[in-house]
Length: 249
Ligand code: BV8
View 1 (cartoon, rainbow, N blue to C red):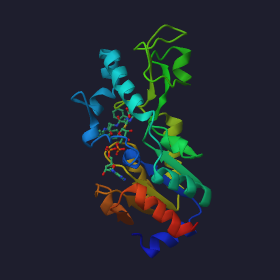
View 2 (view 1 turned 45 degrees about the horizontal axis):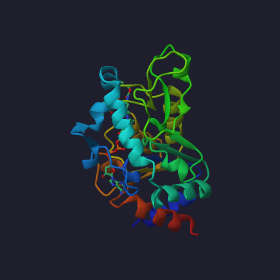
View 3 (view 1 turned 60 degrees about the horizontal axis):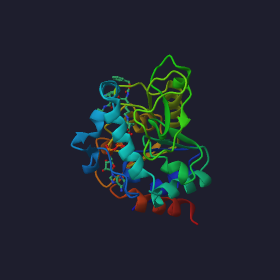
């Protein structure tokens, strides 16, 4: 499945960075964004994950996130998540950058985890001047009720602590992720259609900085031609095989 060159490069790497997308959670039962799962009540997920949709109808957007909370709550990490946790233990200078908000990497044991787009189990005040806007906190309600939930400090609407389309990523978060890409000797990009920016640019930054870049995805993507190696396989099968081949045990 993987070339000898890829295995040797991973074994020799002094710093390994991984970027994951929704595809890594697909085998846990989480619908991907652009697959059939990207629809909810005939809405495109991408049309609801926006500040405009929330400003217009916070209740509808919260119904969408309650749907995803209810779907996610019983789901478990799959072998792909666990393989990346094992890789973190085996490889030096490891960083896991995820576009996913489902928390499954953390449940699988990821330590150095950079959540580019936030986390569905955290909420914050939607009023930027409220002190709670800068202090997200955990909320595990399934479902959140009543919706939209109210901020205990200013009475405004609480929102999911996620990055919506059209919103800037936290500069510190994206800065750390870009550094991890540029400083990596080996970069794995798994389970992403490489459509969403600025995440999709990271594998190219790594490649330009001289890393060996490996893609794992059942389908080819726009990134595929620029990769050192692109393996068309499911991450739940390919990632355990990769870690086993490089580090055994
Ligand atoms: C921003 C949280 C500055 C919410 C998400 C150029 C430069 C900069 C910005 C842009 C640009 N062009 C356009 C933009 C704007 C926009 C963007 O990228 N739009 C896209 C649609 C073109 N970007 C932004 O708005 C970002 N902000 O750049 O700020 C700015 C601001 C204003 C204007 C300009 C610039 C913020 C983006 C963050 C959006 N929030 N999530 C929520 O989840 O509710 S992104 C969302 O999509 C999820 O996080 C998801 O992870 C992510 C990316 O999708 P993928 O992970 O790739 O999932 P997808 O379904 O697409 O693909 C799944 C893949 O898995 C497939 O390839 C499939 O083959 C594969 N797969 C399936 N099964 C498996 C598998 N792989 C492995 N194993 C399997 N078993």
